[in-house]
Amino acid sequence: MGPVLPTLLLILAGILVGGAWSLYRQDAPRGAIVVTGLLAVLATVGGVLWLLPGES
Image (cartoon, rainbow, N blue to C red):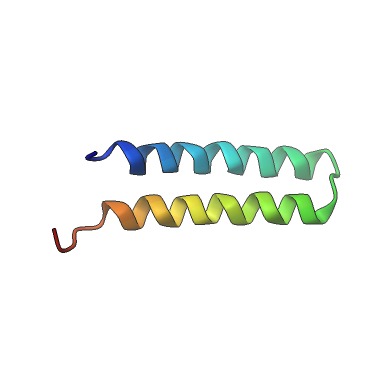
């Protein structure tokens, strides 16, 4: 699968960060902002960890 999946995860993270920022600017409920932000963090961490060298 190569670097395709981590790249998609990082793209998803960027979209989620933009969504969290948009929710914040629209005064959305705090829970929605927190959940979207946490999903962005998880996608970022997953994408970065996937790219780290390891046992193969």
